[in-house]
Image 1 (cartoon, rainbow, N blue to C red):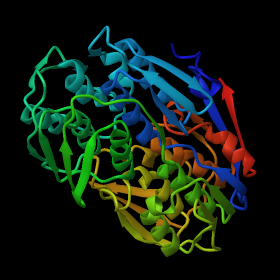
Image 2 (image 1 turned 45 degrees about the vertical axis):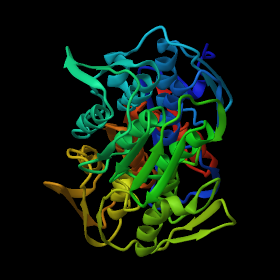
Image 3 (image 1 turned 180 degrees about the vertical axis):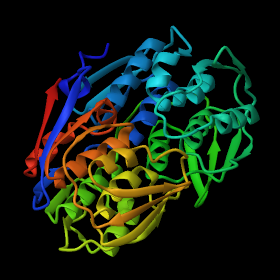
Image 4 (image 1 turned 60 degrees about the vertical axis):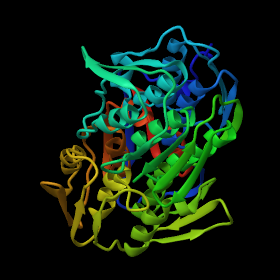
Length: 433
């Protein structure tokens, strides 16, 4: 059974973050980036594909990991988390259902659909609810699994899926989908024959999952930039795997260094995974240089330059960095435009940043930022994971005290970010209201 959750996974119902900053504050020092939240969740789901034990290292201690382990244990698996090492074994299942309570808390719960169906021939997964950052339909998952021979219906808010052994086929996604690609890679690993997946997402988290599956005995190869060939096998085995560093946490700390004209050395990163963010930071006047193979040093310049940014699938500028970069652009003299192409309704942080003094106007899928504007502390509300990170960043340079509530969103994806920021000199504390 899962050990009692470490402090890093537990969140009080009324916790808040208090940030005391100012326009002259600088972050300096060294920080270690945690494992990638968006890589470990599909990796945990992949444990459903084998009866043998899987060990994952560099696991981030974040709320979403706890939610996924609760789901795996509810299905019948056993999980043991010691420090940042996780071992999972699913010898059999006692339930094939991912409840709405868990799926609503974390949309990534949909990732158990493919593995359950491939290994056990049945799955009941609630239709996702979760954070309100736009529609993320699961129709691409369903259509792909149907092409592999699954029988799927929607009943009472649940995806009801049944199959004998899945059969290989050719699947071309209508649009790039990270979780859709991951679900189909896992399902195809145990399908009979060959599956070709076209127009796949190629985010580092997707290729990290493929690497884990191959360690477990899958036969996955990338034919070209967005095409995967999967030769199905009858069974998969155990494996040990290191989760890649979190490129979004990397980007968040890079922006923090730029925003505060700081000097930060980031340890345990993969610079190539953050290439699009690094390019935009350099264009803004920030110095970002490699330090050895697994380090990055960011030194903020005296002035921030305005620019236009459009989010796009990897290797483009990530949607998960849009909110953080918006804060940086509030300090750039002139007009900057951020265009969001991945998710609709992902500007919920704008109203909260305006409360702090930002001049931002939303025009459809664009946010127009006019700077440079001084920020001042206020009470604000975190509305989703990356929005909450943007409010923490804004609080670092806002005069006075910024109080951020509903920080359970922040804890879904950042491993005690306040501890890391304090190590860089920030005045930030977690309080119970």
